[in-house]
Image (cartoon, rainbow over the protein chains, first blue to last red):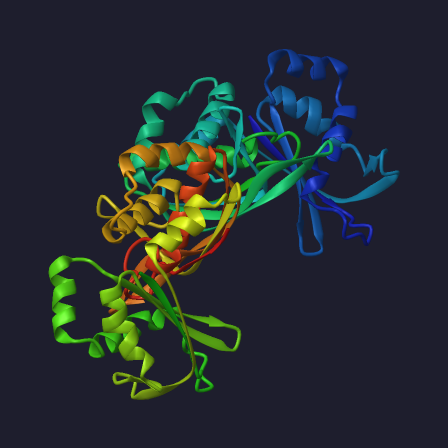
Length: 244
Length: 244
């Protein structure tokens, strides 16, 4: 099951809140889960959640996504009971104004996006700083390969009954996804005193492929709105929105 | 010899002038060269010039570059005698306010940029809509291969004594040019009623290579400020500026 919790936070009349708060909020999240679950995630080397914070005008929205039921029960259920977020290092307490939660099973995702006919174009919006790693180097331009390799790997880790073969589909997607529009720029993400090279912005692909491939692209992209894309998606990086 | 003529035009208090005027100015240029030279260029399939127009705030600058002495004599010398640019189709006459001309020989380019030690980073600014063609498709994101293949091909067409091998250097440059910063967006260029898919913006590379490769990158880039990069550089596309 995939679950998204959107939390509206009170800005405290401060303009210093932005996507770079992600790692501080990650710290808060870790304080609010059981030690056992934290250890288990560490043991599995699997991040069954992603989270990021973003400012929309006067609104500050913290989004927490979980990729299976265990993570939902351990992370989201606990956070849902809170009225505020206390950031110890900053000695700040941020009031929670509203919470919105929605869930979708992997079967429903499959039915809604893979079985039903999808559009021949798709738009990705990288709403928090996003980055990939390849051969030890940060990659700050989103190629088809980097985006979909990341999505497929994350998808295959969590969808139990359905798998997508990277070897088979990545070369195909590189051929059939045609970049139609984009507006992208590099930036950095603050992480424990380091500035991670990254980018933000949006791009649109035309998908010149048979319908089942078009549908797969849309399904993986929708999954990506929960998993995030690229590196450090548990720290606030790689948050995406998709227009189908 | 490489020559650049920068012409400041009077805006006529109009805001409709922009980079898309390139093809109209190309028409004006063709009216002002000899038929023989025009035929010769057509026969050779070689564009020994590039031109583009760009608005800097309240200033409108038309830039004409020539890549050899013949083109300088045939194109720039003639234009230099004019006081205005008359656009017949638009029934407009644009006053020339200022002209600036500068020339550099290929030997001087080689000495200044290949012999002298250059910096480990370089910035490209794509100031008019730029596009590449690959296997019949427009390519609207500037990869290392697309940029330098275009520059090397144009350079090899005109530099008589010095040549750069694409087969040897393109794979090397793909490895050593590391994208550090960018801000790029897609757009279109109006050409005879067609909207050509293109992009504008800037990018910065770090060059992780021995000094002679660094120098070659700078030399090709400087040449590119005369030749333009990509397709339709005689029509107003692919104008670049370089920060060494």
